Image (tube, rainbow, N blue to C red):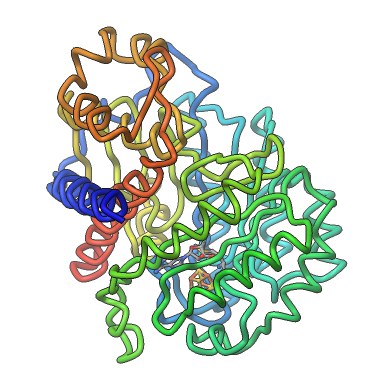
Length: 422
Ligand SMILES: C[S@@+](CC[C@H](N)C(=O)[O-])C[C@H]1O[C@@H](n2cnc3c(N)ncnc32)[C@H](O)[C@@H]1O
Ligand code: SF4
């Protein structure tokens, strides 16, 4: 009991520090230094590409991502612009082999999506592709097309199998039964099928969450990513405004269920939110890759210590691309300390901080460069090991809190950009 209290307190403290550190990502310059997006001579293969498709057929009020109501003409123009944006990176010498499609709902316009994937394959030696969608989008035909397009990891936003909860989430156009049927159609057709489940949603009981996990296991799905509900920046409707704040008092109780029913039941931890049967691809370009380029409206990039923010507005995006410009409107060069802490956070989120890789990247000893941070984590038993510093069972929830707060800080950035029409 005491240790439960201690973990919650430590998690609260680490979350607080992370949010404060993350809020520095909001102090941005609007005068982009072109050097920040120069690749130099090292045409590296380890930069991944994130493609944001910000359209959905209906908008879920709790959603904290940059998304807009689907309109076909607007979406077609958007895909044309995406090709031009990628072209601008190609001209700068960038090459990508791992591609992540997120949204929004990337499958809203299948013909454009498939053309775009074809375009990427023509230009790059694509080795793996991960893509998000919703159960509603899936049918035997879309599954066949996605499989033929070589999607390796299909991630499906289920959120919950409980109809009452889906209703409370504003996802009235789908049911738990539909999700089950669609998942069974998809399972086995891709290297990895992942489902997203949300926890700590208002009105969600611990028992319902246990049932969601049981259904995930019964269906034999490869992987599940559990998202703690995060505040949403949207302010359009009263319902959306309801999600500006989130009650975190029960969050740890939900996480304990993940620990017991998933982690201790033998699923492998890929991140502190993502658990798989065996070795599966994960969706975390921020974990697998030191650097990534994000294309599309509302994407961010992280390149050699530079944090780059694209416009959030599809209209502004259209305008900038039509002028032949990269749609990056804000930029920040991270200090060494910020880069170190960002690195530490993302690696711990992915369960392991490797001292050797750290030395290769930062040219120094991890225990001297991150001495204070590691001493704190070790003091409370949140990490273990020297060469490979891994998150302990006790450390999983505090790391989850840190990541959530980091995302919350990025949501602040979204809110700011949307408000200022950036
Ligand atoms: C960008 S969405 C794309 C998935 C797809 N559009 C769908 O809704 O099924 C990826 C995941 O983010 C999660 N998500 C969205 N808003 C969230 C929030 N406010 N807090 C926590 N997770 C959230 C959901 O689990 C969702 O499946
Ligand atoms: S949760 Fe998915 S479907 Fe709902 S608005 Fe967000 S991106 Fe769109």
